[in-house]
Image 1 (cartoon, rainbow, N blue to C red):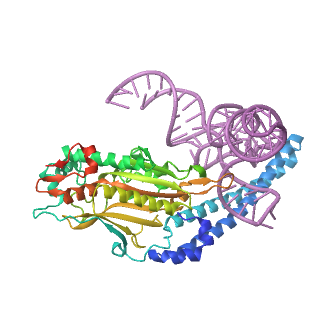
Image 2: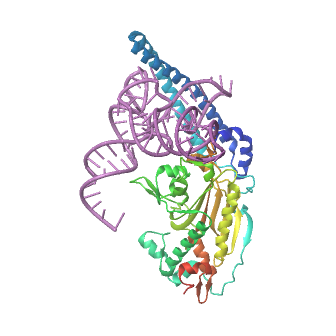
Length: 423
RNA sequence: GGAUAGUUGGCAGAGUGGUCGAAUGCACUGGUCUUGAAAACCAGCGUACCGCAAGGUACCGGGGGUUCGAAUCCCUCACUGUCCGCCA
């Protein structure tokens, strides 16, 4: 959620930058500013009323002490009237505050100046392509067939137990999952991230903190009895660690990494790209999160992209880095880089990581601030990225590394898997 | 699931209807003293909103109520502790 002060001070600049998103900010911003003016006005009047009421209340107390009952009673009547008018103002103020918050919820983050224009992922700017796309043998097949051939992932069994999108990993398939998780976590820790294991269910407040609620409610599984939500990404519980927190500037940046399963209803996403591991309701992911000083957040964003590139290099997967265009940029993000691996048998790029700088957009909702010395607290910047999501990595590994003899495990994973080929 | 006690500032912990945004201690910041440090002493020390400022307003788990006046009384919800039951 954007800061009101920023909207007031940089309205024109915001309007221009929002064009990249094809978002007409002018109407929305003017509306918020108008509501805020009304809010200020109402609050001033309310504060005056309350100040007077407080004064009267004090006098009444004193008069009673002095035994001047009649004078006190006269004042009481006056206070009662004040109360009525202040109550009206109070409910008006609450109304305005709600309206402002709701209006702010609908305004996306301001894209960074370097975000390219465009409407869809076709307009994303590929800034790097690296690694050779392997030449597969004649009988090469997509990963869902490989999974079946080697009995490492059973999609039908998952359907029996739960439903579509909940695969069962068997034998070496399961071991490969565990190997990747450990590899990713170890690499993150190596890079200075602290490992955390957060809850997989979160309460409403956390859902609001990172912005899943209220608008993306339908994408999360909801335990209605207890009113908990299954996390769609570790970003939610990990970022909410910092909700309502004021951090010492000297403690920045804070770096956390966590492995969790992720649960997504994926309501409405049918059709193409859903075969095999391409889109699941439950999947595993290691997420990296940083809380940064505003002056450092873009430096840190690059550093996080480098971290993920390092993972893909070590896994020997051909990948590319895309700078998302305005139309593809997430609601809460100011700048996002997607990392995609090439899935040779499907002959397409699969998104395996999305690394974003949210600037103060999330922090404003979370009330996540930092303090420099004795200065006033100011909003921190938050960043996160997948490092990495497993299913599409597995898909690419299976497809790209398939040989007539079996699927070759990348060197770096062998100490985790304990085997070097799936056959 | 049953019973019971709680929820106050970074932490600990007073405060049960009026001058309480809140004692005190610790922590923290600045200063005095010291060759330096410690100790001692002095001062400062929550957040947000409004205001050029002076200052004002709100916040004692959340919401609502009683009252001229609520941290304090009432209702309600959430959470936490303890005991019992159940259990990986």
